[in-house]
Image (tube, rainbow, N blue to C red; front, side, top):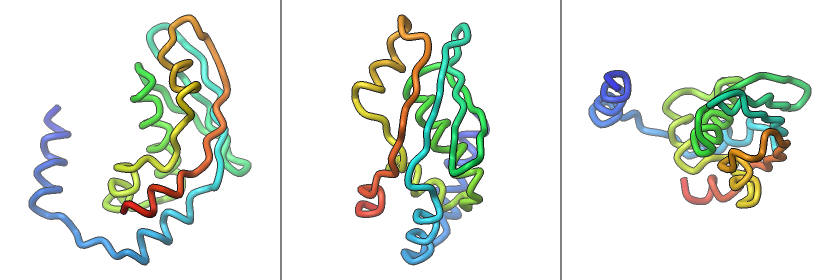
Length: 126
């Protein structure tokens, strides 16, 4: 909680000027598609992200949080600077379909695979 408050204050007081060209370059650095195999482990959703020959893990307690964590893991892996990561994350580069979101929220579904395509709409609104 304190960490989020500090980040918010930093963002409001020391907000760096983002360059459009750099934002576009970082966005295009991200893979066009990722695949996430996930399963429930108690109260957690645990996912294995496959990204252009690399594989890494993330977890969360809710579907929305899981989608956020998948995006964050991909941004971190591809060395997107924090200031640009926040701008890209505002519009989530990777969003699952409504059907896949429902599976994430349905406790009766124990595992699945989601294929995420990078959402170009994130570029248009940034």
